[in-house]
Length: 148
Length: 410
Ligand SMILES: Cc1cc2nc3c(=O)[nH]c(=O)nc-3n(C[C@H](O)[C@H](O)[C@H](O)COP(=O)(O)O)c2cc1C
Ligand code: SF4
Ligand code: FES
Image (tube, rainbow over all chains, first blue to last red; front, side, top):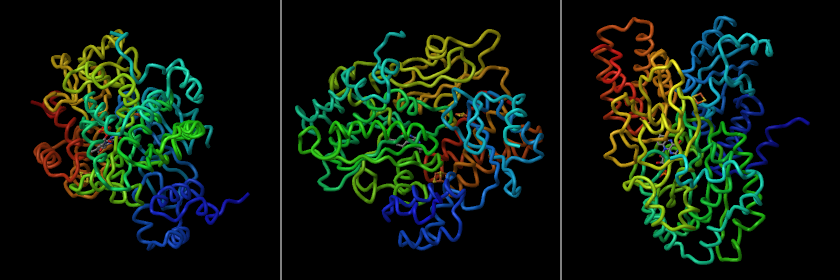
């Protein structure tokens, strides 16, 4: 069954406290909040479109741009950092010929992110929504093969 | 040592977190019964004041006093918010609390919310804690079925609604006024205070915000009494604390121990010390925002007192040995604060950015004399001129690395 924006919005009463949860949900379902959808959200909540963007653009879990198919995130929190997460980033950069933080590649994005609260199982990487724990630089190749 | 009082982790391994019966079998929700049948909200707050409990979210503010401020307000609409946004690097104690004993937290939330006279409580959970959100939803449904919250709680006049609000990935939203902004549908930027949330918080109404661990102490205090609690741990900030041991220790993980314990006891008695062949270099207490301690400071007792030279913060203890590349850790700090600065004020937005750039050049061995001079200006500015404490947090570890680890030379 196709999930439409209208259906998502109906799960939320048009109150201020539901704006961020609705945006999160839309971003999770469609990958991002498009201009057109932002306009519909604004209408639904009776807010100016600029206000919807103001809120949407602030949060990591709400995207306002179309995302590449492959999104790789590597935790750089303190615990992961002292267990060599930087080497994992370098390994991915070399293997995929990309640079962490580059927003312009339409196929893949490598992001350095903050602690995910899984520090005991670090270093942690997330590909699309799949979480990998105790990642090593040597194990990067095998993980990437699942996706490419 | 290992047998000392357990308040929060008491049942972590002997109950199934998804079964309310298990929690009831070990005496769960007895504190709520006691509160509803035998105590007035004022008496409950009195008990919490007597306990000396102070905030576990980092600042150590006396919990009873905060609750009283909201409790005495005559406003008809008030809120209680449980802060489960936990996103300080290296910190996952509040997550474990939900993983192992969600009803303890829920019981605490109900008692505190009713004590301050709130009809609505929010549990604001870190947006990455999806599994924990599911656990809480299940546990909340079970508790509602037993009439522990909802309308006419346990046959009394008390009504309470509880709602989970999922954060959207912003460290600054752990700060209570930013958190409130984000529930209100705004950007998660801190607000100017006064007014304090206790006067004008969520939707402008009196609001108490407490950390999840703080709240998890409440059922014990209501059952056993504030005086008994006040005898545990350090007199200035009594009770137990969840410490998160990580880095180069034999037994990493979350442990519950009294406040006032020394860093050495945590690392060696609880953490089992460092693995063979690793030499201790320093530890960082309280996550990326925390201070560094070197060997001769390991006997400092950790408390929430302002006089404690090493703030306990989130309770994270990161042990770093001499084989670690310090530049990786420095870049972890600077990158974190650069990403998480909310951008509202210039000193922090620019300062965290510049500090991260300099840390990059330091790693590449390309740091100039100008950089070295600039670092002191940036750190001073972060420390003294930013709108909220995040600026200070961004300067703390870096400053210690300069003075204690001599990362810029002598
Ligand atoms: C930048 C920043 C981040 C914070 N993050 C958290 C957090 O993740 N969890 C938390 O409970 N408190 C956090 N706090 C503290 C809260 O503002 C607030 O003091 C706390 O939730 C009050 O609860 P307590 O008195 O029980 O500690 C943060 C504060 C600042 C300045
Ligand atoms: S200090 Fe940083 S996080 Fe705090 S208000 Fe200023 S920019 Fe935002
Ligand atoms: S530091 Fe990486 S998960 Fe916490």
